[in-house]
View 1: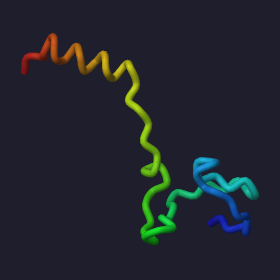
View 2: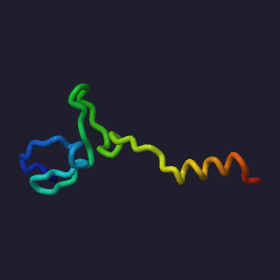
View 3: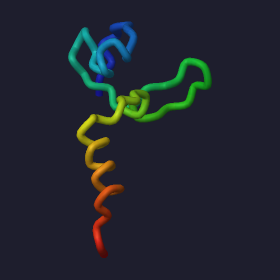
View 4: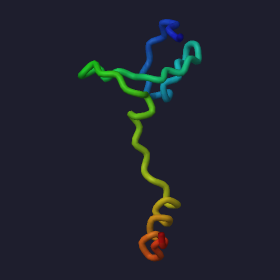
Length: 64
C-alpha cells in the first residue's frame, strides 16, 4: 500500500501520488469524511458517439 508521506491534491493527478507513483483507489471527502472510489468523483460528459447511438435507437427502435 502507498503512503510515502507526500501531500498533494489527489484530483490534480487522478489519484496517483507524485512522490512514489502509487495509485489510490479511494478518496475521502474532506467535508463529510466519507470514502468512495476515486473514479466516482469525476463526471465526464457523454461522448458524441453515444449521443448519436441514442438518436438512432429513437429513430429506428430495435424489434425484440
